[in-house]
Image (cartoon, rainbow, N blue to C red):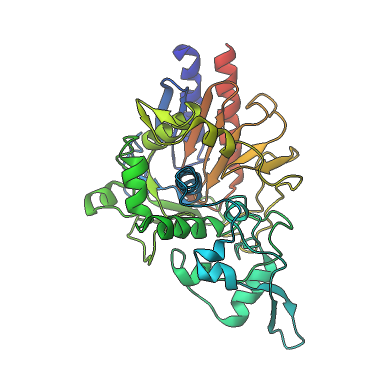
Length: 389
């Protein structure tokens, strides 16, 4: 099998040589072992330092499933309730208003929501929150009230709802609130809780919310397409954060994320360490938003993100907290597989039916970069082709 999977390296190396991506790391795993992994290109076009399989980078929204796992572990332990009002634990979530348009002077009009926000709403992105880079109303609100707060701050996530809880799906800051609920339920920072309950037991030794100076010096730089044929390169730096962002704050590497995916494939256990029950993993992998479906994210800032939808044309629901494709991907994952992505063009899928998972990580913008998404799709298809071979 390994000889067939060697083709994956050829695919990624060719893409680097063609200039599609500056550098990429990728891996394929079963529940039992890593079947293939590789690193290609550079972690910085400025320094020319090579990308390595253990190179650390900002995984951004690939943080979300880890935070979701922590919340479900708290549900297991009776510390959180999926359907209780989230405002019982986090006062802001009981007070948050719905944006109901703007008056003739452009001032935002707010009203109370028709129902209470729940943990289930938050985990499935049906609470009513949004991101201003994909929601024009929220962008107008932020511009109108003059908020310029940076990501990874409390102020950045204290925004009104765009719709009533449960009305529709919209990708959002909701998982940041989930992380804060874990903190409130456990009296620990999210970083400490994850370290004690997940990163330690799963031997995810390079995953954290803050890098040491040594780790920072060896981390991958961010490459932003300049609209021509090159990139603006930003070396990694410590974040100006005032909380542990469960929605996007983690640094990690390919080796560690493979261990998280393998734990899911194993039904909550890895190398003798059980962090979730099989029943909880099954719940996480089940559609938890009924007839609602994932829709395209229309960008309000094409420098940061293109219009984004993974697996367009395939109906997608949301579990706790994974995207779930309701139909198989041609040449790729089976129906019911789990997946999501990180803002810097990192992607993963977990196919429990076929006992296979894959991850592909870069550090580049804009999100949903055409060449990077295409390369990830080619990587997935090449993986299944090799396994069939």
